[in-house]
Image (cartoon, rainbow, N blue to C red):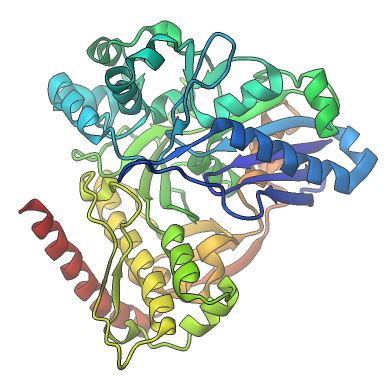
Length: 498
């Protein structure tokens, strides 16, 4: 059987077709070729049109099915990975009522803060394992107060992946993991939190039916199948947010295992079987894809909004048409510490690890007579790696260690400089694999439809493609640079409080 995986990010939609028997990827494609637009009508806002996702999903899938021709008729299941925490609201005709308020939008911070204060710290941390923060529930509260006409017309709310599955199947479903990532889930009672609904004034009827991540969640509509070059009636049998799915793609499913990614945002995601939380909600705990009533599997997520997006901004602003690979090669020629240039990469909205403060990005130590674009290239990668270290220190307080950090061979992890800095500043061995989010979604589909008889069988084609280990001498060097970087960050945080 062939398996189709879809990874719907905020930059692009990627589709891959996996041979379930060999574990080999037959074809991949992404659309659009340039990054999708993010609409920011006000500072801190970030919105995307759900129909733009759907359009690019179709284009990416058609690229794949066209490339393999009649083999596409062997595709037997579809899995979906999606950008987490976004809010999609549809009317009774299942049309979006407004653009989606996506993961990096920070307008709802105060709504989550007030909910945390009103519901109480003890309740939120023991039942929700998080503050409502800036997640989907708080975003919906913003719509309720600021766009009451739209709120009154809402039939169902959903996450981005739920919307795309609906467009494929016509079925309205969400997942238990999705409800937890929106901060709707009561971990003590294993149900949607009535206290949270009552506080915000939400009716439970606005939620679609919840299903496990691995399950038959609907069947591909005949007209859509014809358009995409797929067999009609094949199941959508897996869905998960991009970070739990990234962990799945790396076979991170058991207590103590850790995954990382560094696309637009940067994430360290550790799996635990213990209900622990950060008292300040700087890192967040959700249901993992393989959680069950018998086996507790929770994912502790560290998210930094401003990672790959900083690298992209530097390329657009100072790259003069250079490829990322060329930038990486140039960055490698600069000594550690970038000759005094320091970049704080926090320019993509409020940052959870900074207690939901929006401090903007900063470039410090720039000297016009010494520095050039290569120093910016390296300082950006160092600043991103340092932000991972800063967040990982917080994660350790919840019991997550990262002796080994698994990652796909993609995005920032393609850079030897980034891998070197990250390994030495965190003390982690970084292991790269031949996978990505779309291939993870394909494997998830195979598990959900029952094609794979075990999780072990699903990962038979997963291969190590690179290992980066810490070096004692380099660790000392980078720790000195990190100390300066951290001092600048904390100085900025103090100034932000004035």
